Length: 396
Image (cartoon, rainbow, N blue to C red):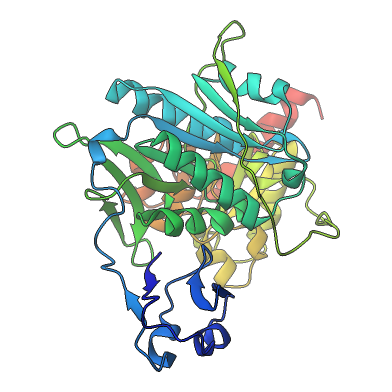
């Protein structure tokens, strides 16, 4: 815990109990006791009349023997008993990191079946820690963080990765706080420093104007969340074998209960993050009417419509179509960038696409640096020609 109680000084006045905003202080045998919910807000330090509450050295890791930590773990989230796609992306980068460090790759799965755990092995995991406790049927921060932190303390993985999804962003920071280690959010690239063995956690910073490389050299595990659709899946091997370890912990509990889960209803016919083909328009369209041309090409190709932030900020298209650091991260088979200059914020969200086709009349546009195919010219001349040829091919 970040703070501790000097029981010799504590008089049991309960001033600290009333002051704690997260109910992290309780009374035991007439003395105050700090439980695991402490979030280090330090409110209690100033209210104790006896000075019985002491702050620990925040910089001192709980376990200084970082060499005892081995292996790479990924957290495989599930929804409705089915593993989310981010888990397979994490296995891809996890396998690369594990092989580079000469260590194993494990996955942690809560609330799903053994069949789903076997799929994780086929996608690259050597071992899966599986808990089928009913408390995990619906996502809830408390039991998730309790069990994952407990497993990490027991098995000591060197690196722990999770998705930068609503679930990952919700409970992974709690796990890092329990373990008193660092956490880098929204990573777009991960590498191993060959000299030190530290995990190089790379993410956009300062509004996407620079790419920052973050290290956690003094604490373990090294923890990071990874943006969906920026990492490639590993190779699927139907015959791959691994170990499934039943994981559990006595006394798992939650102070809240999920009453109902309501799925979002949207008028978007194609999910941008799941689309195989995306046609995006930017400020180079010059006019919001240009998106009718983008829409026509996307429909012919069976794809989705995307946009740059500039087009969204101009009010030309709704935010839900935005691709980039502050929008959606996508990884389609084919990505058309029409009239998009290629600011780093946009590149972060689409540069892992398999094929990138750029249409821009400015030959110096930065987006040409990531293009598979580049066409320098007026999009209002080029796109209609593309549409014409596609219609001819489809005999429309």
